[in-house]
Length: 111
Length: 113
Image (cartoon, rainbow over the protein chains, first blue to last red):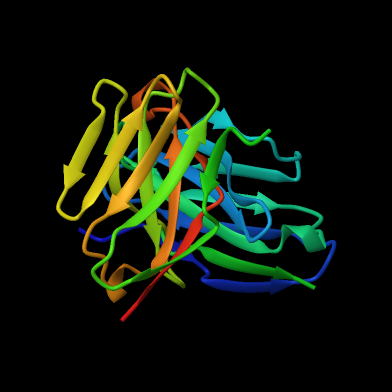
């Protein structure tokens, strides 16, 4: 079974731009969560989608948004990028409770 | 508010030794406690997890010890190997893992020959 895939793997943007990251969950998984990983703040929860509905949301500004499609694929969007948005963005999928399977992440650099 | 505190930040252990990483949590509603292992350039991968109805869980060389009254849990890696060198994160979740994971700050483990 293929794992969680994230595209692109690396991204360089400038301040003020917007970016869209994509996540394809493991086949059959309906829950997709997004996390931001930085050296200073560690791993922080952004949001979770289940059956195209946002089920949980973390403590991030409205510039961070996401959506999930009927095939469970998910995208997250960050508008008006700031330098502090530079991070590794991780997507995780799960079938139900317990284990979340993480993708390799998208490394976003904001210049 | 950091709800899961992890220590130490880094750890160096000799090959064959025991690596011990500790975590403490504040929210008594947490009922699922996983440990994740992350190698450079990879996403975290689940290592082992425990629920508060047991005090210890062992899988191969990896053991979680859980102390509900102290709100603490720890990861023990027995017979540590160079391949165990990675960053380890403890985490906690509510509703038996159905809710978001709250992570500790991570421990960079280095196993030296």
